[in-house]
Length: 339
Image (cartoon, rainbow, N blue to C red; front, side):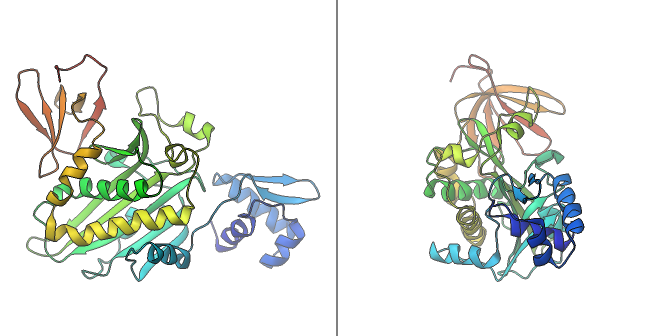
């Protein structure tokens, strides 16, 4: 999408009706060009309504993000904020964008938000659906001066940071599902994706991405996944309809994650372990783990210091499950062993 089309979205963001003539004048283009750009926006999944001889409007107002308002929200909440903060209108994937970039020096993170992400993905290469204006997608690029000893549990720590942020904003029932899901009432609210590159004995560069549903339209919600997929929810539901401003959610989530990344080399996962256990939505529940070499059933008993899931089997032993090419499901009542 070109910059002029992105400017058109900003003009329409208030949800009010705008005449084609005024839009053309503001953009310095013809009315025919405006009509063509409206078609381009629709092709990108942005719902633009037209009224004959009256103009265009978005189906609903959208609060677009900008770097200045994000910094203000973070500072007002007493949260640190990086100098390098980008808000891009359209991108393939914020994670891939930062993963391909030059790693910033330790202590100078990069933060990238996207209004429209066309190739977002979650763990195990799954696509991440983020309809325009309905959620948040952003990534943090962070360089550790030295490889933390418990780097494998960093994703769990980041989950704690996100839950902390959302609970302070009026969503007290949000929990975590191992290894990287943010959930409410066992329905998926968001997900984290971590990618890393490093050299032996040298700095470690980590990209941490978050996708979060804020207000997911019902038709989109109903169409996500298949019969076996985890049902989805949004932050509006978790907040009982009192959804905070989009910039507020963005600043709090990213600010808490930045704090966690700064603290992690010093305190490791031990600092977050009790809190992660308290937020663990599957603790002491029967679970099914789908692995490439077979199925494991048992009772989830939390996570260890390295971030591995502990599953108690019917034989009474504990098996450690590492995040990777596995799928974890909450089993039906009565499955597994007695808790």
